[in-house]
Length: 539
Image (cartoon, rainbow, N blue to C red; front, side, top):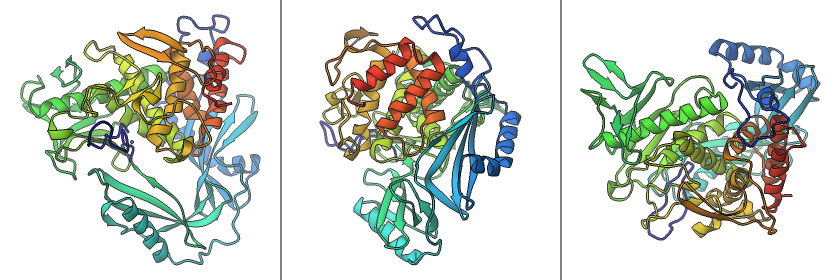
């Protein structure tokens, strides 16, 4: 579950979770870019693959997986399973793989092979450890792992827990030396009413809990937050439905305060939406459309998984539910109505944040704990903010504030601040050795701060009527390169260079590689990436 926050702030409410190849066009260099390299960004940008081309790319990569495994030096007992293929305009192909060992999934063993048009290649790995275990026969019975997982859920105060599925044997490689382990999935309900699907990893020899991860990612009509907006709907018989045929068939449903099922598809007689229960549906449908368009027109990404298929949205979840979440299991977004059912969590940046958790799951798959978890949360904040700017909606102007419309704190303040994250009272402005011990909603501050500095630079300024004043760890001055370039650098880093275990040091490397690919290693963009990370104590 990716939640907006994990602890109450300024009131007794638990804050909600914001949880959770490119278009075949030349992506022009933005104003202020390094004019000496006008074609570099185009060459390193991904090209859009049709459904048939994508399927062919996957099939080809999988048929060559054995040869690829040998080429990059994997052992004879290891195999590669294709998860994503991205092709750049210059012919470079980035193929993301999961790994198996003797047929068992290797969690934390994911990698990306980058192959240039001339055949030269290099690899980005989630772990550099050699994948090997003495035996794939477990000393521990699966029932022991199940009990361990249920205890973990109980410790988190989850209710209605059930581990009905049998634990599966895996190789755990995300932390330290690879070991034989069990993965158990416990379903239930979290303390704030959010559904839970807790993945617990247990050492198959000692019974020790190695790791756990919550998989539920908390994240024309008249809307609550965005004014009058255009909606793409579908007519069925004499009624209209909130089904977006232009964006993969995305549908929006009314759960009518229930906490399970799909709900009832919103319908209307005259295609003029808004008022009553419809309003939250308008916001969610609009937010999904804007987010789809943002990814499509900015990066050439067609849908969350890049496969042209739409997700679906559910509004009016539960009673006074102060949360919103993305669930990769149902490939859907869900929104509560807030305290007293008066502030639905359907603002645009929330919707884009939620969908972006799905993008992260489909690409880097950043583990939702430690520093990688902070990067996961920050990615959703970064693209949630970016989509808000992209929408250019006068009723909700773009800003570097997260959740400013939904009033989670009860006093009109936003949930998070990107220019100086610590203004929320808990988030980290800079990296320190203990930042990974923070809740991921607070360790995300470092990456949020990076994005702001890279986009706008340090110091005081006013943007769209909002005052910002961004400091640096060492008092250095950082000059921004503009949000458009910062977005492209983060997206390329996420989709081609980050893995499930990426931490802040590795994120610095990934964004530098992305900036180098897009703009060269001698220009202002590359230098700004390095300066921004240094200004955050990530060296």
